[in-house]
Structures are given as C-alpha cells and as structure tokens.
Image (tube, rainbow, N blue to C red; front, side):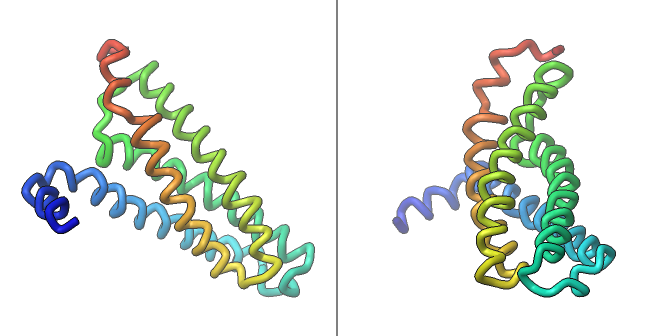
Length: 160
C-alpha cells in the first residue's frame, strides 16, 4: 500500500483528478447545504414539528431546489476543471444529459428515498450529511466511467 502511495506521489497528474473532484465536490456540497439552509429558513421549517407532514414537505422541497442548483454548478465545474472535457455542442449536450440522468438517479436513490427514511429516525441535517457522502461516491464513479470517460471524446468529432 505504501508503494502505491509513493507511486501516486511521483505522478501528480494521477492525483489531480481525484483531488480536484474532492475540491469541487466540497464546493458543490457547500452550495447545496447553504441553499438548503436558506430555503428551509425562508420556508419556515422550524415552524413545523419534527417528523410531521409539513416538516417532510418543506425539507423535501428545499432539498430538491438546492439539488437542482448544485447539479448545475457541479456539471460546469466537473466538465471544465475535473475531467477537462473538450466536448462542445452535441457532445456537450450528451454529457449534460448523462450527468443530469446520473444525478437524478442519485437523487431518487439517496436524497429522496434514503433521506426521507432517515428523517424518520434522525435529524434532517444528519440525514443530509449521510446522503452527501453516499452521493459523492456514486457520482464520482458515474462521472469518471460513464459521463466524462476519455474514450468518449475520441468517439465524436471535436467540432460537434
């Protein structure tokens, strides 16, 4: 294991992608959390009893809105800075559709299903933190191996 770490340290380009993904992932998570907090404050989440229907409705609505805006931020930062995709026009639209599709899948699996299940047994902030960890892992692998994979760039002409 130490030899693998030493080999990685000798090749900083291999570290660039995961480190920039983590950096922009932290920023995306911050965007999501700040928006979620602002929205729950604006929508009066504290006025509803924990676990009630109103509480769930407000927390879920705020979560969805924050998610949409965070996904837009994540797409542009991942495309440009993390995976350095050069796709334009049709290729970029395809990446965007795949990116949004993968994020929708993670939204349904983690942010909606598991988040709401977790709300039954824990505080909304703790549930959201747990979901963020699961989402980051899922989204990295989707982005690396499906959405921005390097082979895809050679499949389409550069001017599309």
